[in-house]
Image (cartoon, rainbow, N blue to C red):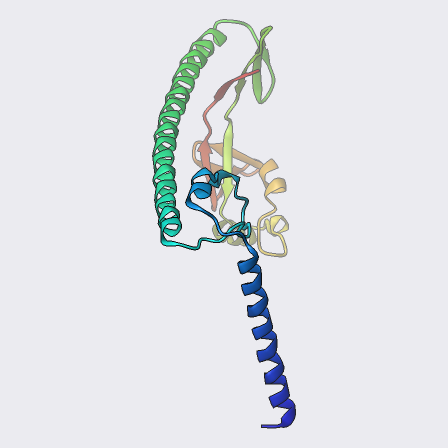
Length: 213
């Protein structure tokens, strides 16, 4: 081992010894607490990661500290149990309030839907609306939803002379193709020729009634 390495190790040992000595001196500089002073000490005043303010120097004080830790843990456990009980009670109340909201609004919405059918209302291609002072009754028409299955649709388009509707990445030009389709039940056909198109799933969408506030 070189002299340089020995010197470095000696320097590290000296630095560690100096640090330990300094820490010991700082600890000894702290005032020794009496039992009476400890009993008056408020643990709630201790900040996070705060360094000690005093030294414990005898068994009576050490025993007090142990008992105090046990008391603090017991107090925390008591408060935690109380908090858990209150959280459970609040959660139960919120769930009951949610059920009331869902059940009540669902009931009133169904009543309004029945009323909606008895009054004249503004109708467009996709919606029907009836305005009130506090909100608008809206019926969104479900219509027909067609979902392309490219695995089947693309080969069919290619084989039947409709390759122009196929994207270069092998997916149907659905937006354009859909304009030339007619949907009858669960079947999609080419409007001009009546040919049945494979690879398209046709489902009827339900009407949606809602109350806009």
